[in-house]
Image (cartoon, helix red, strand yellow):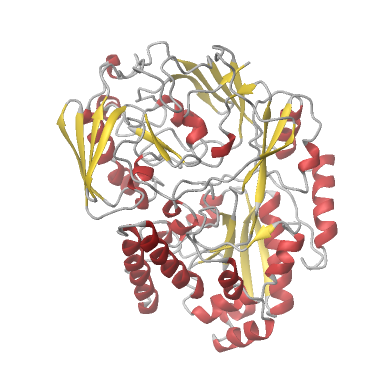
Length: 586
């Protein structure tokens, strides 16, 4: 595939500054990667530290709410990867808009305000650390083609949760256990009341229950009529009906029968949603994504390439475009398969052999901070920068000594898998140059357009290390952030960091991580939690366990058309924008 003039310009500028540090290599560009890459307003709600931060407009101005929202119009969006199905019990790739609009939840969480915003739940109570009681609204029905349009009741919530674990085990679901394995049961008391009983305390429980997966409410009849899967059918009560879903994209149309609330709720106005139609066009080519947005074909730029200081100029001055600076919501990490990288000295050697200051000054264009398994986006929760710098300290002499002490693993020949999209190859080429120069190993890179097939699925792994996307740093809680990548009950399972590892040292480390994790979840107050979270992160990072996060940019940018009003840019990077129904087109 020939590169467009945009990509020649973009990567030429990037590699022009980085050629020496990356060993003189240039990145070949392929197709975009499929990556797995979430009073009544908050009565009884848990108070949780989450990211906020201020935003500064760099082009145009932020959208401001008009006195009266305008109903109607079509929101034009790009769909950058083919989804893996619509079932909320475990399908997590590529369908955030579809799931967010065709299903309902009890509530959602808005990180910028640190508040629970109620959806089909009228209220909730948390009498203790191990129970939550939800009261459901009257007048909520499933869509007309779903279960005959019958009322949604508490039993539907119980059923929706009860099917998740089996779906993951038997149908290839990717929903992380972190979101749900703390729940013992969800039991309906009557048609409008459900009680969530917990196995153990969970500090961020209300945030977890408001995540896009796996707590969407489905109709039992539809699931059972379709062999237990709702990948190609709708089973929800959300504000939009899915009228198209194929390889070219999706179309969502506002459902006139969506229930009316008794008053305006944050994110859920009583006369919303306002937008009539949402069109999602499949577009996987990064250059076409940019061109289409700048030409006005799309209302929000959601291309696979994040907007940073190197490509920010592409958006400045574009007619009708607003570019907004926000806290960073993107990250990447280097993955170790813990079934093969069993010696911590070998893992540390790799990290010590990389000049992270050079990475920040070149790859991140000097706009970066060190990052751990608990993102700095969660202010004051993770380890401070000074401590992170010591953990990531560049020391090639120590790196070589550790590598030799570990027995020159893999014969000094490493295979690396990276997404074929530009940013990932940039990082992998950088690491290749660093490891060859500072550790004396050879690195062979295999670009891939299928993250799941090449990185997740093979076991034993067919690579020595991989470069992948970290979970969104804008997520409402650290447990579904980069931290879940090392949890034995999270994505640590994928990298063979498990309690039943055949390697005793790995099994012991997994038990230690899980014990620290449960202590963090059960913290009775914020100060205790900070101490417990930092103890957990200190252990994972000083032992270089599983995926190790890279430094990240301090800020990033989003771009959208100025005809969008009340667009919740402060919460971009979470699932809140897709779930909110209070924005409109002017």
